[in-house]
Image (cartoon, rainbow, N blue to C red; front, top):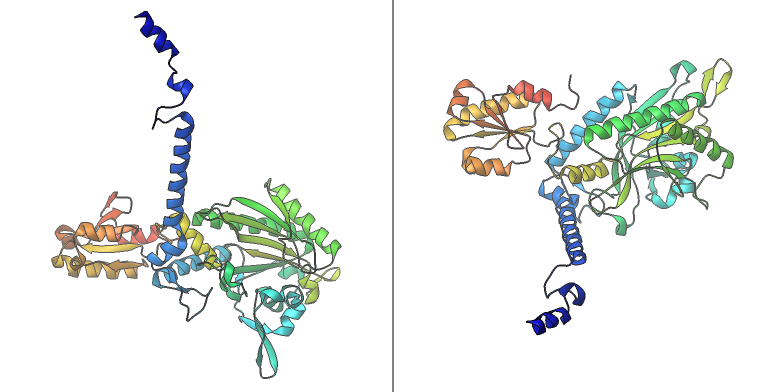
Length: 441
């Protein structure tokens, strides 16, 4: 016995000699958890990648015959885009913006005047010769809005003048950076410009940030950080240090007054002035700018913009702002954030009518008509497309599933099943339509 005890004491224990084959040590357990977490994150990243999910959901597609960086919107994507357009248009209207429309191209001379040709030409498409004149696809909307401002004389009583437009702009992006909807060559930009007296510029910048925050909250967008984008070295930027100092001081004043944390990044400013960029990330952790507010003291002088004040003619400040940025990048982000399960007001299809059998088809068709008349984006999934369960699964991303059985058909209603599996009972179509609007009340 004694010899056995001594032998046992002399044998190395597992914690001295290392783990038993196949045993998990604390370190290996942590490594296994990390590997599992990485694999899960990678799987989620792949599953939620808008390039895959957007095509599966019928939101957009591309074709080499159209060209790289030129995606086209499919019916579901067009419905999503229209919902965003209508929401932002109404949000801007309620906040004092007046909407305009302007051409997607202009004479080269316009962009020479604005400074784009001297500082931004490498990102623009080459000019087109038409009737002896050179025209250029616009890289931004601001020169056109400057022309709108100067279309007639302005008084200090007219200001601030807030102009907004959803318009096309075009960037000559290299092929290597293009991807899905997040980086494209043709952009539908939610743009806007506020022309105001210099002493009101800080308040207008802050109001634009409020508007951005309101829209982001409604869309389910979460900013990862705010960036104060400043000028860098080289000829890309307008060489006017005093002008830059004034603009930067104004933006810093606004950010400090709001208690907003931010990072300063030289080399990310617009060629004519600094900007506040609201940054987002995709599932792969890649960061991009969604919304922005910029202070521009350059273009008002270039276009000789003035207004009449009691002290005489004065130069307005031009505040550029984009509430939701380009609709393509926004849609890419929304697809990934919501994984296709969009809020009811954004969903391409808000309601699907599901008759239990062919006997309920006439009542279901009438219910669909009422849904469409009430403003819902709705469709019918008749019984010949499979069992009720199969049709529910096929429309699992639709917020409202309206099941019509014999009892509902007789009453002219439906049993409302929610996307999360909950039952709402017989809810009037008009109430569903009201709940599916971006602005309630």
